[in-house]
Image (tube, rainbow, N blue to C red):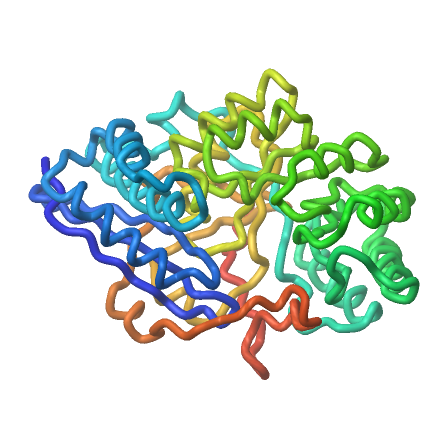
Length: 393
């Protein structure tokens, strides 16, 4: 079997642009992957085109060889653009391999260790601005059956916060905890915002609200700073979404940067890479909870890893998305009692609707994190569209 063509699809999803690939073969099998990279989509599609020259004519079942060669032959290695391109293509080859053998990808990676995984919701806060609005939306999410919520309460802060900004942020955590009760887990998102001094102050202030984790408290450029925050924090630290290779993973683990490791399958080199990273974390007794706020194919692939990885802790998922998410793939996300069921179909159990992808072309989207507009993730006047399918026991 040989790869005959590779197509790229960039689909606007309002808060971001999904970037998908589809690999075609001379035996009719196809595979899909995702490398969604906010604010760098055009660079990413260019990198995919560069790597395409290597892959055309190759056997897609030789995944390990091709992932290694695409990395080795790129003199300027690592970084989000190259690694996201490799991730998308590697993911698509696993999809083909699963279809070739008639098995889900997790069955080809050691076999299942579970048939469902607990989720935590991201995106439940769409449109919230005040402490009261966050609390109200948290109640709505819990009423739907969600048992863990993640959000960023820090407004537009960067590196430091005024006393008023600090108080508002902590009050937001307190209000959500009061709204949802003690049995719902809270995950506090930092988005790499704060300097170590401020991050440690925040960690101590949120401790009374028993967060499951405090994510990416400091910018990702300095792992020593992250390790220092981890050493002094009274609450669990999670990080790693901007770790792009197994080589950076080694440094992350050896420096003792976090309690929970969060590599992103769309950016770290793909399915094989994240499986290796999880194995590297296991002897440190560190669980993995991959960063996964992107599109349907990335979610499908991350579920495959959840199905076959012993130290996989919890799945991040967007609680809702744009209304056309349901049109661009045949995604099926089955939800039951705070958990997502692991798909059992061949490959990644998902495919693209190419025509529907073309109906939502690329539009530039800009970073919201430090502008006070972080919760503006859906079109004005648009209802949040949940794409889960609740299933009965």
